[in-house]
Amino acid sequence: AQSVTQPDIHITVSEGASLELRCNYSYGATPYLFWYVQSPGQGLQLLLKYFSGDTLVQGIKGFEAEFKRSQSSFNLRKPSVHWSDAAEYFCAVVTGGSNYKLTFGKGTLLTVNP
Amino acid sequence: EPEVTQTPSHQVTQMGQEVILRCVPISNHLYFYWYRQILGQKVEFLVSFYNNEISEKSEIFDDQFSVERPDGSNFTLKIRSTKLEDSAMYFCASSGAISTDTQYFGPGTRLTVL
Picture (cartoon, helix red, strand yellow):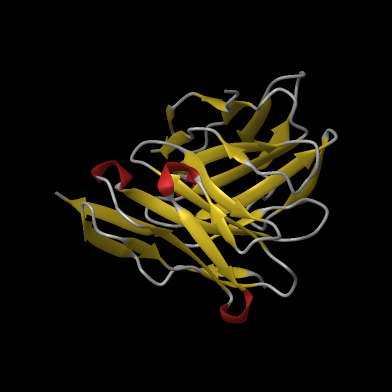
């Protein structure tokens, strides 16, 4: 069965520091991969997605992610974190079939220290 | 920018009561989804809906759940007889002309079953 693993439940970084959130997936075919962000009390906002092509994808708010097939990973990065980036981040993979449901990881909660 | 809307934002109900959660997907979207997130857990797929019928449903989506698109704009999730364990945040999502299009999420309805 398809699955998504986010090994880090909670990460704390200082404002201005770089950030990398890890995501590993298990899926037999070529995956469609997503990162969503959820601020407190808010819904899920799409940060970026990978369908095909260039393995380094750029998203909103200065985020990027790199697809590495050999490592089954799709890690999210940001060179300099802002206090407003504090939120929960979810990696997700679209699984196949006639309708493409999202399978989510458990999420990584990001805390940003001033 | 078009967005998915959900009402109500918070619903409190007694165990055994019926609830209807409402969603207005993005207007030209054709694929509709419900997901739920129990507090502290990951977002889980419930059901997908296309061409006025259920395309896929998870094992969570048992006989007490139903979905409907009663008119050209609304998409509803009905829970016939709520249980304590139905307490969760319920997210509606929609995607565009093909099933692999990005899913856009609403802000969610927090359901509390007492």
